[in-house]
Length: 607
Ligand code: M6R
Image 1: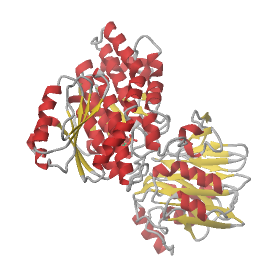
Image 2 (image 1 turned 90 degrees about the vertical axis):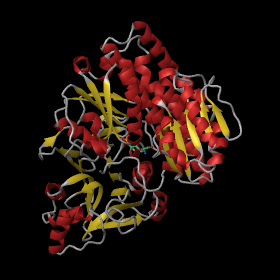
Image 3 (image 1 turned 90 degrees about the horizontal axis):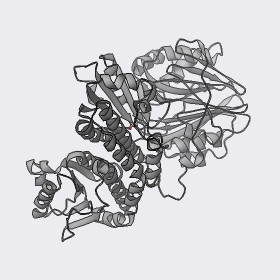
Image 4 (image 1 turned 30 degrees about the vertical axis):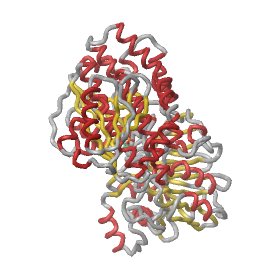
């Protein structure tokens, strides 16, 4: 939540800040702002709208040192007065991502000292605190003193009006990285914001504070000791964060799925056998010891975990529980040290998932594995084992290619565990490897159905509710389809295992309730067909995504999207794609902001 960019250079940094914010807007888009230092003064521009508006407003602004922010509101409504940067007494300016939990106490103390608050944010206390310690003109020391008083999570950027070439940044619980240029330096919430200026990046660690100057930078660790951090060369390129020929990032990302899957599976598909080592060196020791699996995740990533449960129990014969991360940490659970705790996260910085992982570790779980799309993210760094999905940056708030690559990664985990437990014959292993190699082209075939799905979406334009049905390992796919639809089209959508309809939800079915069903040609097909008849008998209009050979026929009130042949265990991956496209085209019909749906943000770094 919230995106930060900062720059110090021997040139105007305003366009660098604005272009950086445009890349980070997926993190929050309630308001935006920037401040530059010029002639001993702070020049601040803010807008209670999108970054594009800030760009217009700051067209004539000049400064060689500045910080900027795009906001997802936590404390205080979205408004210009609550937009960052926040300034203390015309001297100190701060941008912040995270939540300061003790801000009310600090605010009371600062008010007593005579500080006036002009916003409702928690961030403003940081600006005043730093100001209160800045008497000797040492911005680094003042920031460190202020940070010692904060409880909560933060990534911050700080500048002072009388310090024209220095920027201080710090992180604890929220991501921040440092971009290294030639006699110019930058900070940002993620690398996509900095590709315009450098590919050299230093990942700041928990508790790091960095003093950034024109010519150099100094990093101090959580204990205040000077620290060395390696400079990496980012593998990202600008194309991966550009829209290109597409209208929206979501559409682009749906279409990138064949490549994202091929990248995620690359090392495995190029080899002749599956080895635990793909999850990290220690997997060889850990996997034979584990007795069961606990999956922790949120939202779409949680749905991926739900699919994996079916695979893990059936193919690897290993008991698996899947929990919503935000719930897990608040219930008393019984830890089993032989449980493998698997966290799934696109961003690797979801606060609920991170907190659940730490809770699991604190209760005695030592075996942790992260499936994540962002290298160097907090969840990756805090887990013993890992498998990176290689979907590339996902910018649309609605998760698409991250989900299907998570499924691919979880299928690999299933196969490796099945093999470790002696449940995967050499012949079966080769068969699954073959199916995985074929997966990108199978997804490509489904993408070719886009025009039919666009046509189908027209039936939803005037609807307020929708039901999604699936059975077995496609029930989580129905959940994912419903989440996509509600998230970007604002149509209220619910998903049910089809057999559950008659236990209540059937009461909702009438001609105004479209019912979307995932219909794979699997063992539950005949049961599903009966469930669909129950819907049709009550006047419900059906939209069925049916595998070839299911013999479900188009008829009045029954619309069929003909999918390719059944893909066996990998079928959930194929059946996800048309539901993503359906949500996308319904959102287009509704005219919503597809990539930035209301009230949401991409990375949910607050609890
Ligand atoms: O980055 P994560 O995978 O941890 O994010 C989890 C959820 O916030 C995320 O999947 C969310 O549900 C998506 N917006 C759904 O499209």
